[in-house]
Image: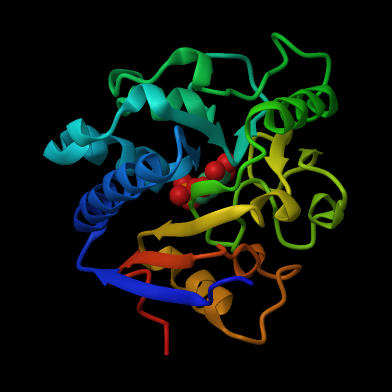
Length: 244
Ligand SMILES: O=C1O[C@H](COP(=O)(O)O)[C@@H](O)[C@H](O)[C@H]1O
């Protein structure tokens, strides 16, 4: 069973980031009362870093035991560690490394500096998830591209079709860089809560399309992922402007 989408509209990008950060902190505290560890998957792009910066500024963040949070990424651009275009580098710059996480529980996707290919990196990441991330993830964060992509699953891209796999190598991505590693739809199905964080008028069409009940994820990948307990669209007014 999965939860249908619920839309929460905030006045602007900063209000959205701050509210999502407060919600995130609460979700982590709740998860840690249920289980020894909270498990989350982060995202890159504009909102992926905005929420991290807001978490750092949320007073309630001290209620989370950050040493008991296990961190993954829903996708990564296949670039060397520290490259400014990597999602984790951008999240670090936004303050991820200041939260007090245990570095051994922050699972980064290998880039070309430490793996032979995007395929090898995807396989290694899938192995690590099997080892440490079998339990359903508490919260998975997604940004959404203007084309409706989530993670590195792009419209009409064959990587979307892979079954029986946790992670996939993506080549010829329509958005640079061309090589990436993404978790699969199948993998995202193991989430308790899925949150889409979307800001800006350039995303309005994608948001409306993803929320339309007849939309196929092959055309608009953001229509695909659903959480077992909640599927939240946390959006600002501009991004929500086409939602009927
Ligand atoms: O390439 C990516 O794009 C999306 C969204 O990025 P945005 O800058 O348009 O907000 C991001 O969520 C994803 O993780 C990423 O690799």
